[in-house]
Length: 343
Image 1: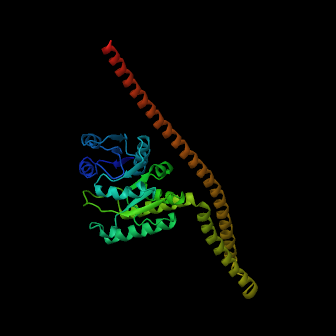
Image 2 (image 1 turned 30 degrees about the horizontal axis):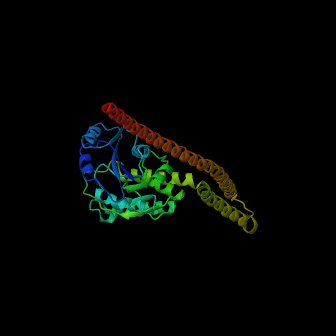
Image 3 (image 1 turned 90 degrees about the vertical axis):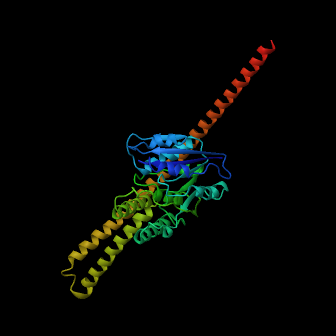
């Protein structure tokens, strides 16, 4: 079984050697361990440092494309390299390398296809009370939307089986952490979590400029992905609220019309009621249309999964044939040399 540890990097020349030194060299149930660095347009010597420290595979972008793009490039490259399990970790040595054994164990044992490392954020010394509270609130929201039990949804320390990796399609350009969990829940991928340990902070996080910015982008990402997978439910909820508000305002107008003053002076309520009822009805129609589009998207994703699987199987078959031909050539040369010596 082959494990590839992928590390998205952006200007990590200083921290990368520490991270690489902390990675395990052997693990139970794993035959091969290789490291893949995805250099997201670094302006320092990240790629060169990676090669100097024995990294087997380096993919480098000419410009910065964002964490989500770097993550998916790592996933696709790892699949092309024949990975059976893919572990994603950060280049700032936030996560302890020794915990990779715990992270991949459920996959090796066939109990899960996606494993998230639970940092137990309340135990991290440099996390403020506000950050811990927001992390827990955000994780609760993602659990509700994804119907999973992951306690630390923003953790970047996670493992994927080959099957799970083939089914991932990250659309967000901000981060992959929230989207992949919601996707896993909606695609019925077996997800679990394990407690992990973290190292001391080597540098500050670069994922967001400020807490309000992070909250804003995270909320928009969660909403966007949820609507993508549950459009009918999302539009129906909004439509029901608008329709109900319009209906209640309409009842108020009827009360005044029949029992008080024949509706005099309440025409504005009647207009507002009609507008809200119409908007609520339109939202329902939009939900039905969006649900039909989502059905087509599911078919497209299934087709993409099959195409990727066939391509990778053909690639692996070609490599095995090349290896077989090379071995046959060596044997033929050895036989020829033996015959020449005998002659």
